[in-house]
Length: 548
Image 1 (cartoon, rainbow, N blue to C red):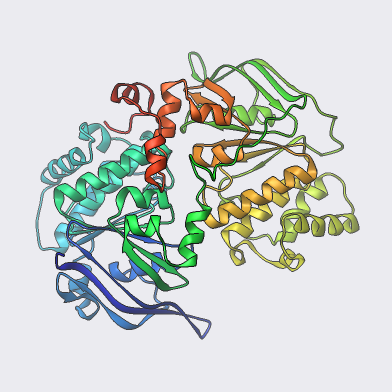
Image 2 (image 1 turned 120 degrees about the horizontal axis):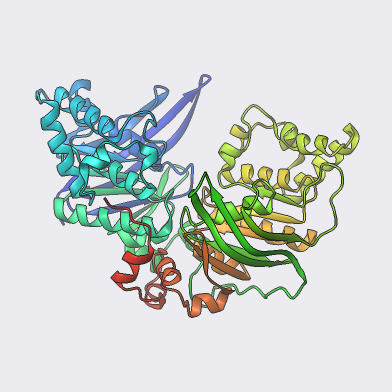
């Protein structure tokens, strides 16, 4: 085996808060060689990001490295003078951030972002360059990440690029000074599954061509299988298991690793859950729905959509960003008016202030007001429907019981809750006014797989207990495969395929549906072999373009 480029040995880190010390890493040891791809996996709070920050040198001021060394190219970076260690950032090693949208300042053009980073790094390394020279080098880097029209990209604002193009720019940003170590922090989490697939292929290609070392931080085990040679499993600040990727995924030795794998929704095989199709009467009937945004000609977001949602069923609406899924949901919720077409909701008229539909958003961290306690959050919709104080108190306690949270959590603020607990509060808030239909907008996308599993189990139980109907919006077809009884696939505002879930996955008719399923990262070779085959011509024709 090659000599390690990065060698973390017995690293221990603690945080001091309000005079108390809490250890977050304990004797962490692993290595990454040049040309090797290592995945650091574990749930939120396991210590993955703290480990990466310790390597880069961006730990917060209240962090204390109490033991261990971090060797890079044969030298201990922790014992380097500060100026020398700072010079390594962006040159010897670089970081690809998770969210390509929030990583950029929206008021500056892409070229300004890239030029600032290159100019600062050049100055730090004692190199004097002109703006024209830097622009030429930036264009060359953009070509390496398959953005051939560098001038157009550099002159664009972040909002004018697709998510995949922004992610490619972020990778280019990390490559500006030819780093030897690339640290990728959940690089595809915020992207559609097809775009994520392209980005992972690009990272693999760059690592091979540049002989870089890759440290991938992720909780997506399907991504691990696609990009990693070795896997390091972390749990509560400890490394509990390490080994070759194929061995860890097929034959894990630790119960924690086994539990992570069990929580991954299967795409094919005996563990797949087939939900029966609802035979109840339709509760939502949509015919000839069109939605055009803006003045003529405008943007045609929904084109002649016909859809039937039956009472008590879980209906999945799949497609990439911009396909029209959310526009359909907004019209069902009466938050937007259709340009043409009809929508009929066959349900009893709700009482004062009540709505037939409510929504559970993707990220509970941003959908909950950080300045409100759980009690204040739940009280607001109850007040709007005219409940008095005593009735509100009783209903709030009932809601917490429904989502399996202790009643003492009424006094807590969002920052005191885990991601799964915050999403349970968001579900309780959606249930407060007793809706008949819940819109689930990527309800588990921001959660670890194990937490995702418990939230899905909760939603299934609530549907059974309360007689709810779900419309699930997602690009995660592996989750839809096990959660939805019927699905429809949207492409550029049109429904291109619809049917009972097992039938759609067993024999997808439309090339776009096949492309979506084929792009899903899976954890077993058997599932990979059972995926539909998609030609390059079909990919080019139907998938969102992420290059320029």
